[in-house]
Image 1 (tube, rainbow, N blue to C red):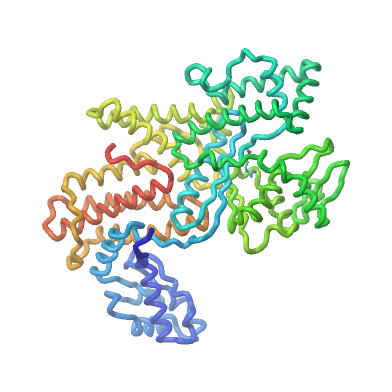
Image 2: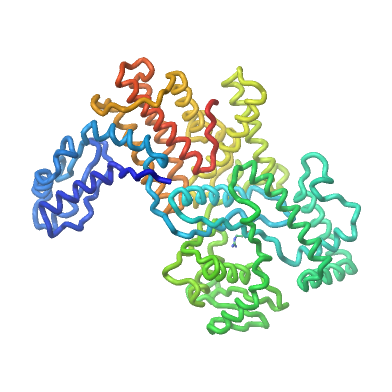
Length: 585
Ligand code: ARG
């Protein structure tokens, strides 16, 4: 937990300008001082331009009034530029003091603005008895990063893996397995790298083919669906076995990805079965349910389809069955009522936007979803192949997540080996895994969330450019500088004047908390990626301009402190992205 929050210099400067506004023009006391980072000074305040009209005075004159009223102790120099911008420079000792304060704080000075917000994050949600494929990559990686960021910002995060673990397909699969007892599919009976889900995937396809061609089997499979839904113990036991084995396979991928989802977070569709009838009854009581062609539906009041008719949400199908819509209605009701969520995030493909819009609308009309609770679909774009179409294997099949990760790790290994011929095979394996997985995750996170992006392994694992490997390497290089310097946790002396490159780096470091806070609100991890990339470049600029190890004291210690704070910020930032930060690379 925080020792104490360190107020960012931008916020301190804003407060100083606000004070000046209050002193000079009490009637404008509440106005935004509009303070930003600036290329010409440390910060720029645009308050005079923004407020001149309200004060019926020329911007330049208001600017002069504000300069006169500014606390000269905190600020080094204030200049009016252009039509009335205030260019503000902070004293060097204030900047050094800020570096020291952040370095001394276990949270790097970052506040906890999400404190106490109970936040449900629905992510990953693969389907039982099916292989995890490239389509599950983004939800799993983005969701996990949001879980980490929000948790760090103080939210009480509740992870929910809404597994697709229920449906008529399981009746058919169970019947088929029963009729082919000799077929191996449990993980401990399978050879090599065949996983349970890949075996089940194949078996399901066989079952499907048999269902279509063999009426006897089709009848027996239908009877199995009824048995499953009716809770027949033997059928249920088989189903549970399939779920457990599938989860075992998912866990291998989660472990490899370093994703925080655990068995306790698995709250699949089947969990809501017992609540479906009640949910529907309650919706019927509110009068928003309509019977149409023997089915029960809720017609949207907000969205119409291509035929200009209101779009329906399917509560109960004509055959009496419940589907995805019904389950999500029961789910949102449960998350509001029983989990008592303040905020619910659904990290799901943007192609499901309409589904969530309808679910949220219905939940609002039912009175479950009120203004006190936030429900947000966190959509993301598609992973594309080199041809610009949704990513497929060369043969046109879906890309298995395992294969994609293996490929990235193999390429990362070659690149790391080339750079470090002295690494032992073990060390190389370990670092290649961290670099390869990190590369895939970073490529996914650093692309604007809602946009599609092209999966290009060679670019992802490169040591240059905006890649995970570049950031990991930047971090490892700073750790190596610190090792060489015999880093002694030296104290900062606030008296030496700051070099421009030191100043740029220090101010960049100071923006970390604001970036995290922004990600907590916008739910866009790519902003954190962009920040870390910029930070690594600011460090390069600093290191090129300012010798560290050869410098005289106290400059040497001060620069080592900047190195340490940069390394700590990079490794922390990578950690909340869910990416490892190796000490050497
Ligand atoms: N299993 C679903 C799919 O693969 C995703 C579930 C997302 N979560 C939800 N509450 N609907 O498309």
